[in-house]
Image 1 (tube, rainbow, N blue to C red):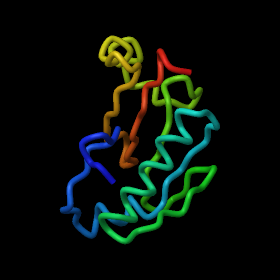
Image 2: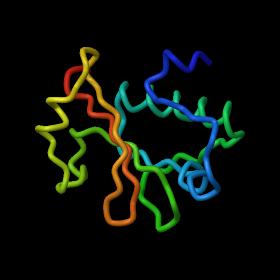
Image 3: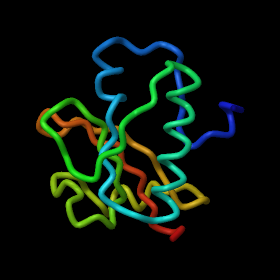
Length: 114
């Protein structure tokens, strides 16, 4: 995998706590953008850490990564969608990590590409 061509910036150093979040990914949407992000994330986690995450359609009480777009109705209201849309790059996305009431959200704001 050519890491410089990935959407996601990987590092080969992740602690046990981080790996707990990476072992489960919650994805409540179906779109080309989300499918592509999930595929890349799974491939990267498998390559770097030997972790093949479980993909779930609903949030769980266990540590997990929540992958979403700003079009998702359950997108955290505390986040400024307009500010995120202003940050979109020329390909139409921005990836951010945010800690929201003890749940990690990773957002791919898909604004332009659909």
